[in-house]
Image 1 (cartoon, rainbow, N blue to C red):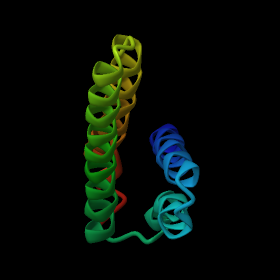
Image 2 (cartoon, one colour):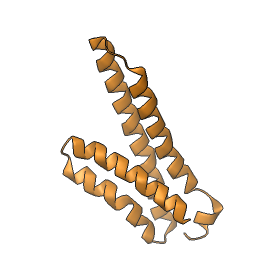
Image 3 (cartoon, rainbow, N blue to C red):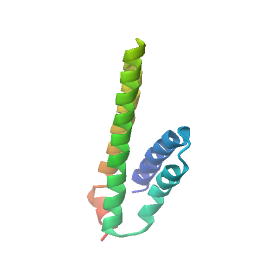
Image 4 (cartoon, rainbow, N blue to C red):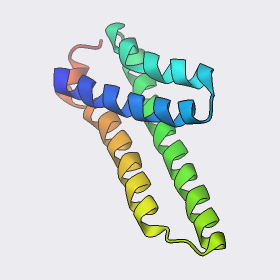
Length: 109
């Protein structure tokens, strides 16, 4: 369980850094608070955090699309950026999926 929360915290830090780069302080605070929401031992809170990871992955994919389009327009290489952001989006989804295990669900009624 602890490893799953640590992985979630890392995903939350990544998306918080993304928002911090754009000087969006409110989303940064919300992202940093997400792992702490798991301290509330309710099933709906677990689902909320899983939904957070899904939304974060969609944000990463939208960012990926924007960067690829921009780089294609400028004639710059885009594959490395696509691989990196795709991996981050996949990692973020994985952290939400790992919270779906029976070990975690047993702690949230």
